[in-house]
Length: 326
Ligand code: ATP
Ligand code: LTN
Image (cartoon, rainbow, N blue to C red; front, side, top):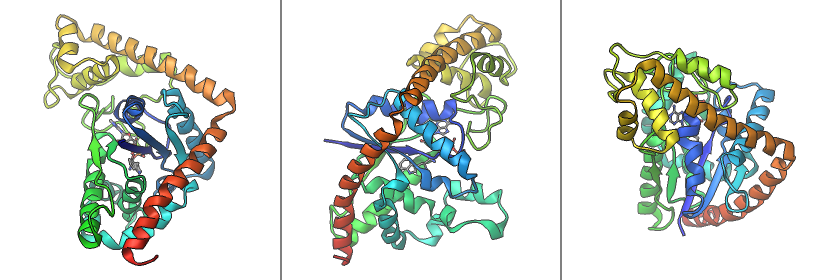
């Protein structure tokens, strides 16, 4: 049976980008194999974050996992920091990823650019080591993520090949990124040349936004010159982004979405996009409230963590044995 693994860092309020690029897909995979979906709380510490804010974000992601349709009886849901095997394996694996390749990672370069050179934590630099540990620890075959995470899965694959060449085939399982065709990269509504991301909230739609906020943001989203609703990310990034959002939520192809709006003006098109987002997020929010009010989130995580520790021990022991620690 295939193993599926993914996670989200609790660094801020979840966005529509997180939902379309990651969250929404997790539920689709739960019937395809054994899924491990976690909250990457250790990764959230790689940039400065307020402890109470972090705690709130962790709880929110857990509730959104449940709200997005992940069934705790089928999927193992857990906090990364409660499964010490992640840290133990990362300490071993850090010896097999090299300074040169780590310093070329785009996410590191982008984050480091905005920091004082003397205040870049080692954890930020070593982020891919921990992420590789997250993935291989569960012998994951499939890693559903947004497009921006491809490089992290690639470096994990390099590491797996390196370990397997050195210690024998089967020491680690080779994972593969799964990136959804529609919605792999949702852009900011205020600047459609930039990714919508929770750490740069300008132009974001948050999963907790009210219908009024959502409509306002979409109706004032930056669009392009001309009046045709066509998919052309280079020349029409704003309209293309809205088409992408529509297609992803309606689960239709971009071509089908284009056809639907072939005779529409921008205003009419934006209204239709807003309707779809509002209806999807209203339903999601009511399931989110139900999850929080059920009082069961903590128990679900504790159960997931017990299971995750059991599964993780198998790979950790195998690696310890391979390298000579057992
Ligand atoms: P941060 O701003 O803190 O870096 P982020 O909003 O980019 O965070 P992550 O926690 O890094 O989000 O990502 C969680 C998942 O959501 C990843 O699989 C990532 O690829 C996906 N994702 C994030 N933003 C987008 C986006 N704009 N479009 C599609 N997928 C996205
Ligand atoms: N780096 C990812 C979060 C993450 C992750 C993982 C995703 C940490 N470990 C393992 C998939 C598999 C991000 O969302 N920025």
